[in-house]
Length: 104
Image 1 (cartoon, helix red, strand yellow):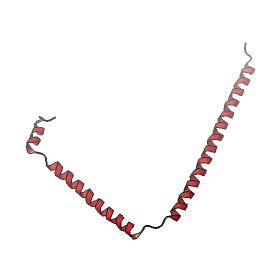
Image 2 (spheres, one colour; image 1 turned 60 degrees about the horizontal axis):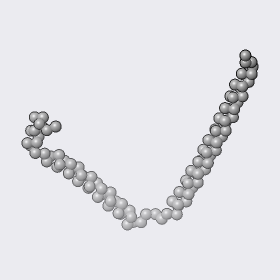
Image 3 (cartoon, rainbow, N blue to C red; image 1 turned 45 degrees about the vertical axis):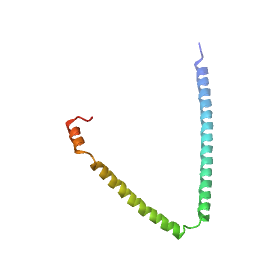
């Protein structure tokens, strides 16, 4: 029969091996997080440098943006109006057929 002390030692060695593997995986994951943070920090610094170099928007650009906003509001209202008109363009005979259950 197997010696229980030997089985306990084998179990301990197995657990210790698993612990070492887990520790190594955690160290690798921690290094990946550190590398990712460094990369993100570098990207943030690069973005800030690029933004500092970009010129402020011109007056024409600002005016075009404002005009674009106004045209967008007008278009939104036109789409809503078209939907209302389209909803009202149903023939009375079709409504009667729908109410009678003739149209699925």
